[in-house]
Length: 244
Length: 75
Image 1 (tube, one colour):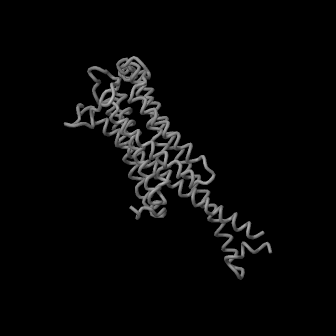
Image 2 (tube, rainbow over the protein chains, first blue to last red):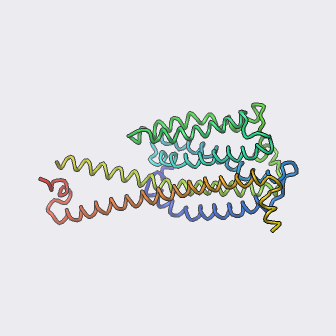
Image 3 (cartoon, rainbow over the protein chains, first blue to last red):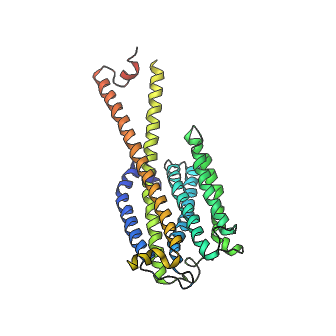
């Protein structure tokens, strides 16, 4: 793990991975959209509204996946003082927030025709809304300090504490009576969903995952450059004050 | 033409399906563009800083004390 701790190594690795991750993202989202919107059947109960699921479900997975990644990076930063972990946690937050937001919006757009309501204060929906607020809180906190290191530390602690919410989201449909349907893909005894619908779902999920890798690399690069700029600026100020 | 309007109608759910995909596309493209811009911007600024620093060091090397030339020049 520490072999990747070196920023120079990260930059070299990013250069190698970025073409592949963007290629995978474009291809799987391209084919995924084709199957999601055209080449898959309408549901016998939901009609064509089932097509919303092909963005909604992968977005929900990504919203939770990004949070777990952010909390894991934060733990690495707090425990091992891993120099890149803070930057990667910070780079993941906006992607997770975007997918959580999309999960809520697309869920709402599906809920209106299917449930007859845009929103319900049930366990699954509410815990997902809390996830969005955790992301927003994390992003606000990490930029709230003049000293970036203090911001990173405070935000990392928030990320770890908030991680309790992830299993709550996952099992909310089993623990409480909710409007939301239980899991149909990741469950005991295999997925309870037709292959013609599973294919676009998995393609979109793969595309979103590759998209996250791209954004992580780009934002990681930006954060490393920003850190180097800070160091040079500090040295300049230091040199200038000694020179007087 | 009929197929196009059929695709747009989405069996009566067009008003829900298309906004769902539209919002998703807009949000993901915005995050991507913002990330690209921030990476380009930060890397360009860093390169500029490193260039000027190297230029100053290069100028200092002509003088007797390379590392302190920049710092002590006002004296």
